[in-house]
Length: 590
Image (cartoon, rainbow, N blue to C red; front, side, top):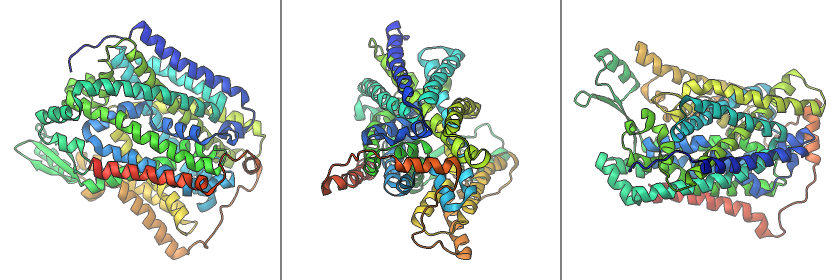
């Protein structure tokens, strides 16, 4: 790709400020209607299906998807698409039709309220804390990707962190004041900006690389195996580690984690079977949709059950279409820059912003940067409000202050928002390294989020004993922690605590799910099974109970048209979305 990069022009900056500033201003304008906790946490259950669906999509596609996930596809290729096309889209459908629906009927505000109703208070509190840990690490990824974008595109160096801080403060202000309604409406507007930006950049790069034929030709010129490895899903995932300069003892310790050592090539090769990698992508995507309060919170705000079910298809369609344009940027970047040393910072996570620097058409760079920042805003506000609701309801109101006025808890939720976003910056140092941002998160998610995901599955579809939830969650997380520790113990000290197959970062998704589910089944074999048809238990007292009752009493005009066809439409569309994802993943790109 020839070098015709230019700096951001004043007109580019005007576009960035106008597009994002107007959205932020509108979010602040909407905050005037927030008067109660139900207004702030769930927008008073007044959200239509299309708005909820677009907001769910906008929350998924943040700057980490544009930047960090492009870095992931740079190294892993189209396999990553399965996570969105089938995993996340299927997870939304699973949540809307089975897992979140009974919570909605009970008037719940958070998805971990369900965990206490099904498994006890310990599962609820642990679930809330796991989500806080997991999602604040995502916020850190967003901050890191914004920093990389501004550093590379604008050539600001370390001063880019100041801009990141300003962006996080702006997102905090309108989120804290406006709550879910401001967040959802601004998400939908930001969806438009970031989608236009993504399509513009993709078109320019696609033409430059020469389409699929050009991608294949350029990848094959670097390595004849690359086209098959990156452009098709059904291939084993291969990772190599250069050990040319390592001692024999160091090489021996690294081999304790598995892999084949080639003395001639001076590298260790580790291979993950295609089927195991695909299962990991399916679990990763589904866990995101089911576990995250950012997604459940939007569904809880839907104005009817019909709207709740419809929003899953809207989000799924948007995700399937835009995932191709967003994530294929990494593969096109690999074709243009096959060696990471060709990217600023020698880091494949920088491939997306590096491609942005080559936009020379007047104004286009401003639109693309505005889109990247819009994606960041949409997830900053979503995670900030979601985690605030978890800490307010499931920790503060449940364990610390149980019976105060509704206004008191509204203010607690608002003040916790800046605290959460501020804490997320503590993760940033851990995201800088050779593995890349996404692979760091992959390890954390398999350790803590998958056991929590398993609880929702087992609680919804089986009659496992109430006590099995907390025990399964602890055992599953223990496996995850041991797996994380096994790698440095083997590499640094030669200590083997797990067989090599259990340390595989992608296999860990399946193993974590099996360990958690197996533990819950064993506990139930000894303690018994819950009676069939056991209903969820509501909150018993205080503000938590009163707020649930108030939510159940909200009466909004049903948005579903009359007729059998209309009632079946959500299920038909959901099936179509799932079918499209399966065909693309396992037929078209297999």
